[in-house]
Each structure stands twice: as structure tokens, then as C-alpha cells.
Length: 424
Image (cartoon, rainbow, N blue to C red; front, side, top):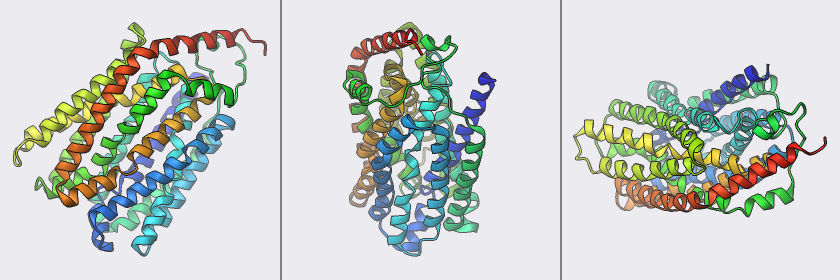
């Protein structure tokens, strides 16, 4: 029964992320009509997304602590309800200022993902976590694709406000589904050292354990790369569709087709990266990190090549952007799995939340910064400068991480073996 339930939980969370990302990223392809309705600049529009990221980042530590302390399914149901309610408020905003404030409130539920990854790590063991997280991560680009389809097929007929009402309603419905069908499991349940026990010892958030984990060299390097790692994702998410329309002369239909191809490539990269990381991890404890580093370096090569393709050469441009999508997403599932590999189960949500806080702190200004650079130069310059610089920095941190991660993994496995012998 437990084995069957874990796949049901995975499907539910996949649906949650798919629809949540669709709602969250729908603003990208709807940017132009929103700018026109409120009469604002690109920098002002970038500030809307940046403020939501700041709100999300500020709440990550709180959500992380709550997930490690209390029942995760109930908290996730609450987050889904907040998603729906705040999106509805955003749809009703009469002015730019109100739109800015209500869009910022949608960042409250964006801090919910650490609970999902923590709970799934207690359903699925370390041998397949890369694949599981890679499969789950495909929901993010497919969610963007769904939002893109909705924006281009229904956006003109319904308008951006009704689109937000539609996706907000999905959050309300999912909150009910999570509350009814998702069950919590003991923290550490899927670790090999504890999997054979009739009763897994109960562990909850512990400050001493959290401090020990946060002092580990691996976690510190994961945090360092995380500060820069989300910059490219945010810039491409919020501005690439407009770049295709305004600087490469794509029609809405051409831009949509190109984005669809890139999104499918991005999704395949998540699963490919997780699978390769799992396979290499069985051979060497550095396997996941090496996979992540290779992905970001290849992402630099393909993105620079793509944005230097002459305007009008659509086929080569699309192929190179597809390769960019595959490689740029290979790191994400391996970073998540690496955090699980070196972090005690009772502080995983907190650790993931702090990683997300750092990621969002670094990336919060990226949509605004890209818009500012675009206003003074071009979106091409903005995308290239931000993505290349941050990916090269991430590759450097992954290189350093590959040197220290084996020792931290071995420490964690010793801790789990010791816990398996503790009396209940």
C-alpha cells in the first residue's frame, strides 16, 4: 500500500507544480497586454516580478521550519489555498500600484516547494531520487508551456484578468485534493539504514542538527551556487518571449512554437540530468555534482551560439535554443538530490528553504535588472550578460563542491547507521 501511495503522492505534487507554475509564469507571455493596459515601462513590469520573488524569499525560512516541525500535507494544502486566493486578488487589481502589491502577495505560496521535496525524499530512497526530482521538475517547464498555450489561445478572448481567475481557481481545488489524499510519513523513512526497521524513530526539527548541517562545506557551496543559479531561469522566463517578438521579429505564433520546442527540451533535460546523476552517483559520490557542472558549462556554449545566430535563420536558432534548454536544466535535480545526500531528514525542509531563500535573494532583481539593461541597450544584451556570467560562476562552485561532497555524504551515512541502532 505504501509503495502504491508514494506514486499517487508524486502524481498529485506533479499536478500541483504544473498548475502552480502555469499560474506563476503566465505573467511572462501576458506581459505586453499588461504593460499596455497600465501604461508602464519594461523596468516597472520587471519590478512586479522582482517584488513577488522578494516576498517569497523572505518567507522561505518560516515555511521550511514549519515543514520540519508539523504535518507537511496540511501545510501544503494551506499553501495551495493561498495561491488561489492571492491570484484572484491580483486579477481584480484596478491600478498598477494595486497590481504591484497583489502580485507581491502571490509570492507567499511560492515558498511551498521545500515541503514537497522533503516529503518525497521520505517516500523515495537515494538510489532513484535524481530521477524522481528530475521527473517532478519537468512540471515547471510544462507548466510554463500550459500557461503559454492558455495565454496565446484564450488570452486575447478572455483577457489577462480572467486568465488569472482561472488559474487561481485551480489552486483552491488542489488544496482540497492534497488535504484528502496526501499522507505524511516518518522523516528518514526511505533512507537505506532505516528502511528495514519495523518502526522508524521519530525526528523533528533540531537547532543543533541544523547548525551542523549548515556548517558543512557541501551545503555552503550549494548555497553559493544557488545565489547565482536562478538568475538565468528568471531572465529567460520573464523576457524571452518578448525578446523573440520585439528583437527577432517573430510573430506570436512563431514565438509560441519556438518556446514550445525550448520548453520540451528543458523538460527532457531535467529528467536526463537526474538520470545521469543517479547513474554516476552509483559509481562515484561526485557523480551528481559533475553532471550539474557539465550542464551549466554546455548551457553557456549553446546560449551564446543561439543568440548570435543572424535574425532570419530560425531553424539553427531554434535547434541551439533546444540544446540550451536540455543542458541548462540538468543541474537542478542533482542539486536537490545532493542536499538530501548530506542533510538529516528532520532539517531537510529548512535547508531547502534556506537554499531557496538564497536563490531568490540573488535572483530577485534579475527581471528588473534585465528590463533596465534592455531599456538602455537590448534584451539580447541583457539575457546574454546575466546568463553567461552567472552560469560561469555556478560552474566554479560546482567544481569546488565536487572536491568536498564525498566526505559530507559519508558523514551523513554514518549518522543514519547510528540512528538505526537507537532504542525507540
